[in-house]
Amino acid sequence: MAYLNSQFPASGSYFMPTYQKNASSEDMDKLMKNSVGKPWAIIHYHKAYNANMGMNMARGFVVNIVVLWLLSWLIGKIDGATFGTILAATLFVGFIGFLSITYTFHIWYQTSDLNAHLIDTIACWGIVGIWLGFYLKKK
Image (tube, rainbow, N blue to C red):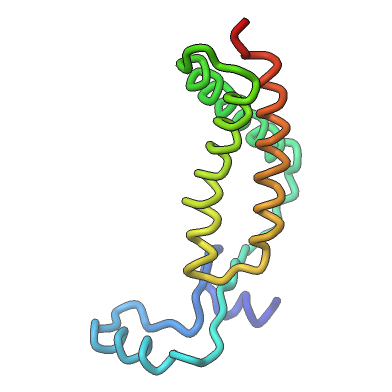
């Protein structure tokens, strides 16, 4: 950690190898071509550990409430929504997020946790879809 602290000026994500701050386009292209087939890394570095779990959980809860409200509003616009329609719509929203964010990031940076994110998407959005299907279905 001492070595990383001496190398990185601030918290952030660092791609290695990388070029100098004021590198020319030619230097950037040269580094890209020379890096093909060689090892590379992304380091997510933080100068200080913040274990404020309460605030993180509160922020996550607020985000989940906002997402649930937006999804409920969207489902409310579906005429004659049945349990199956609501479940499918909810899963589709989850897959849209997974494909456009998580999978796209994986395409570029070959992350190792893609399967875990896919399972989370199916399980979490499936549970939400089942609950909303019972709660919001039109009689």
